[in-house]
Length: 124
Image (cartoon, rainbow, N blue to C red; front, top):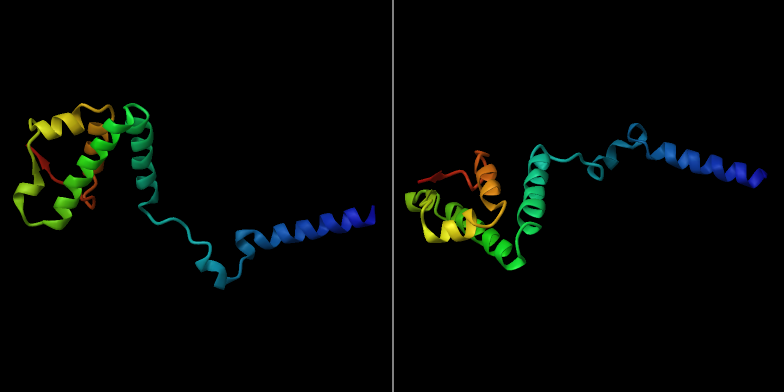
């Protein structure tokens, strides 16, 4: 019985040392809080997982994600060129790969509402 009580005391002491208030200041680098954009990224990831990947066939979902990625890459690569900052909403690529797959247009609109996002551009 004495060894069980000693073991419990050791475990309790170890748990106590792991509490945030008891961490040494040098360990701060190991226990960083998430940055301010973490919650937003998690929301967008959920939209991709639940809204696009689970609602469409895999090839259609991947094509939608690839198309939106290409739009974003072009804006990042050519930020000053107006043709990459505008998307023709009636264009066949946009319609087939962003409008038609379930959840893709919702994600596209939500992602571009963030001003720091590469998706922040005009749709015509």
